[in-house]
Image (cartoon, rainbow, N blue to C red):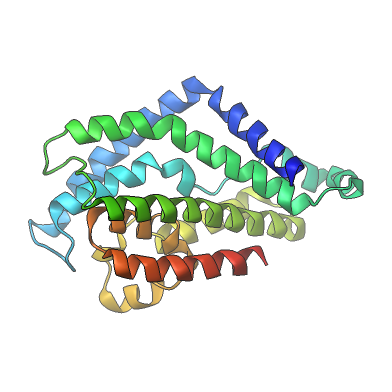
Length: 247
């Protein structure tokens, strides 16, 4: 276990060194955040859809941009190259679980990238007008559940990334596999379209798939679109999905 914790720390600290990369990411997320807020505002036409108001939508978008690095499927270039060239076979001779190593490194990378980008985005979004900015959490309990579900969601995204790694062993095509899984997880997880804006019949299915637990659930708990009691139930389902994905 100490070995995997050490790998997590190395990956976490390594990502923190790329401050220029983080700043460019922040500027990019600001651009997309503003665009999405005005786009969805026009789409909603000032109406409340499925209990989803304009201020809630704006907060959903800004929080989503703040944790974008957590939602993004990424595979280490070194890992992909080693699989393609066959050099990965040397790692199987080491007395360490390769899955646990890659999972710890991927999770550390996601958390550090999120920590670098999110504070500035959140601060500026809080200063924006209430109709297009980020609101405070609806309650302290909702904020606690938001953090718990967000951490669980980040682990789930790393588990999904490990499935992508497994597929690369079969296809030897990192770019194709990552693009496919990112598109599926983004569409079904609220990255491209907030799930409350989708038809109810579609939500009834998506709500129980693993992708929405990555960030859609935490964001909707934060803004009050999902109650704390319902959030607790879904967090339990998310935990079961995490075990299933890892297995």
